[in-house]
Amino acid sequence: MVVRMRRNRSETAKRRSHHALKAQKLATCECGALRIPHRACPECGKYNGRVVIDVVARTKREQRRAKRRQAEQPQAGAGAQTETKKEEATTSA
Ligand SMILES: [Zn+2]
Image (cartoon, rainbow, N blue to C red; front, side, top):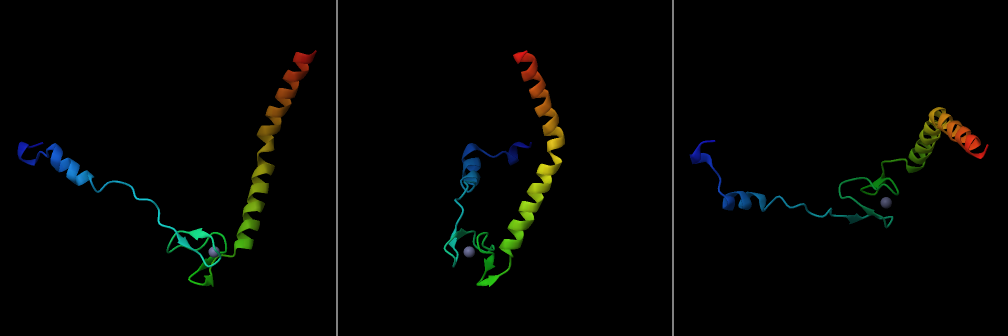
């Protein structure tokens, strides 16, 4: 770096004086829950007094996905469980 372009500590500190993180501002929804401003409420799915997210359908969808994930996982989980059972059997015998 060219000496002419070198920043001293004072200039670096002045630039970084604006780098601090600010706390998230929260607004209160009409349903009473706290929500991020300019975002739909995750509790009731409303934005600007209008329902934009079908909360019931979303929870159902998430439950369905969770169930499917659980159905997929036991293949690995069951194998591990049988291994532990075998180990227990060997330790007890
Ligand atoms: Zn709400």
